[in-house]
Amino acid sequence: MLALVPFFVPALIDKKMNTVVQAAPYKVSNQTKSLYDSLDFIGDLHSDVLLWKRDILIEHDHGHEDLPRMLQANIALQAFTIVNKTPVGINFDRNTGDTDQITRLFMAQGRPLKSWFSLTERVIEQADSLNEFSYRSNGQLSVIKTKGDLKAYLKRRQADKNITAGFLGIEGAQALEGKLENIDVVFNAGIRMIGLTHFFDNELGASAHGVSHAGITEFGRQAVKKMEDLNILVDLSHASPKLIDDVLSIAQKPVIVSHTGVKGTCNNVRNLSDEHLIGIAKTGGLVGIAMFDQAVCGSDASAIAKAIQYTINLIGSRHVALGSDFDGAIKAIIEVRGLPLIVEELLKLEISTEDIRAVMGDNMKMFLLQNLPN
Ligand SMILES: [Zn+2]
Image (cartoon, helix red, strand yellow):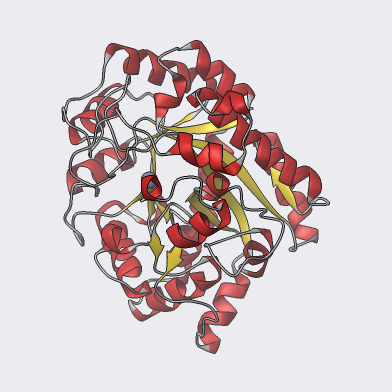
């Protein structure tokens, strides 16, 4: 769609691309509200908000999140995942990397020239923007890079609930431009999670939405090894089934799927099979359930809850988390302040409060305390 609106006002593109099915305000029962308010760690594994050059320190009436809305939703930690190249005519079935919509978007947004034509620079530019927001937030938004950062932040948050934090990821390792040494570059920019592929096959392996449907490449193997050595989380969202098989066979550390649905409730190329869910859990991994129609085959919070329930029943509640895909150029079922609706639906499904706490954020917290760099 971006290709049709060249050099359009960036805020308008943002508004057009990131819509919701159900807008605020969100009403829930008193029981749900008191459970939600008692959750001391709510976390989400995937948001693309940095792509839009939205000033996230200000509350907006469009898109899915910003700092004021995150604080209203009591979000403790958000993964900010950096989109760096998406094909024109993007679709779920067949894309190549021959075209790119982000170049035009970055030009329209007035981003620095060096980020127009380098995917690695696009990552650094968006990472810098999060650091800048953090700097300007008067301590309300921290950027987490290590276990120590997370522990210190948790301590501060015990005394002050009106703060939040983020950590950085990449969506699509074409951002490495085929160079292993760029893993060091993005690590130094704060990246702690890398999705191997996005919508097209790249130097590391095949996308679920690509052309080859192949697995991992030799470069991909070396990259995964290097990510594990640096304690960068390997994210298998958007990976081809063969690529998932290949990574599961070589992974030495827990893998993550930051935003996905499951074939058990929504059978399409984007979503994880039972076999892959089980394989990911066996690594000690974590699966974030996304919050849009094509991920959960439904347009209300009950569809999200059903995907969570299915995944809990298959692999156990310790491996399940939230992975909204907020501001990922989607029509999200809810924006960030609608998360209590998911809790309400989980209660209706008679999921235990212990499991709800785990899925809403405790699992993500424990996972990062174990798997971030020291
Ligand atoms: Zn995605």
